[in-house]
Image: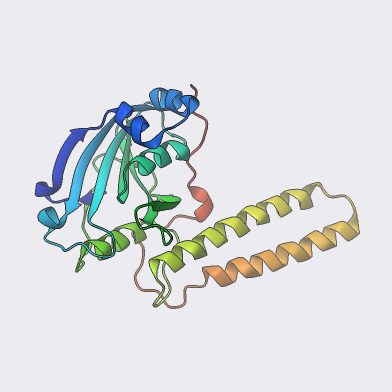
Length: 242
């Protein structure tokens, strides 16, 4: 959690119906919204007037939404509904009891249509005690740079030298896909009885691990991330009971 400037406070309650009007979620998703989310508060607006940083590359404001949960986890699709309704980058401050976690996805204007936004995978800190010390906002020259540095604090794999945020996100997505395939192969290998098939699966597993090691190689690191998480350690479970 960042120590946001006092003048960036907005503290506006966001009605769920407003989110529905813009995002058009299905009835089932709306029901899960009610079951899983207590309140949504537009906590901070990081803009030129509140940060003294100019807008650049489509980032005119960065929003911070405080979402009070009824249960410890919510589905990723519920966060996507909010992201779809707000055409600006959002950092979610999820709270439950006396704990919180910060969650955000890489969000950028579409290359095909700058009026539309593309939302990538979500990254998160672990659950932390509410009294955890807040960290200062990164030093930046503009809002685009501030957004990139804030988001990089949540990304599990440090950037390589000269690696853009977009390239870093794509590399992490590849890592996650490869690790998922790796887990599937490991499961198949554990169940396989035929020796020849085991040899074949081991070869595939070895090749996957080599690809993973290559993508994880960060010999040239810009800076250490404040929150280092294994890519598979964070998932927003889709198990909210309606």
